[in-house]
Image (cartoon, rainbow, N blue to C red; front, side, top):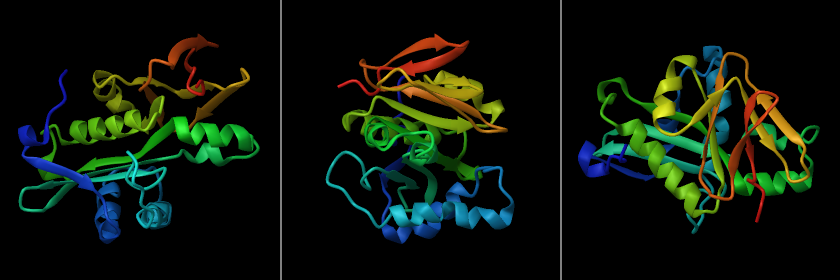
Length: 211
């Protein structure tokens, strides 16, 4: 399926700025984060902090990529937030040397949302495609995300492989297996250096840390 362009859906996609903090929180709050309402603001606070970073490279905010979709009149209608997955910072699971490689080769979509009045117009697909393009240009090998079960076919049509666990083989052959209760995990390869194999019955990413 060819990617829709901004012109096709009559929106423009731009980099989020520090002034977009409230907009991003409002947008991503539309996603069911499987949290109590009072816990949502705290969970989204790191996103506000990421907005203060900037980068001259392919990604908008150092290791993070934060985008806003808006109409020609400037009304925000969608957003995507991407960056290192939280499990990568778990030193009990990921050694420091592996962490440094992982965050430069694998990233995750933390939130993808479109306001109700503008859904089913291809905006979410366009935001995701733009994010994939940025991470591919930045040398990343895979983009991951987690989603509700009813969205499996949606992400499958966009090239994502979904499973109950996210499984990845590290540089020394160690297996990282991540599960999030209530979610399905998905990934898409962005580099020919990466491939998919089957380990313990799970689709498993391999080669992402290869040079």
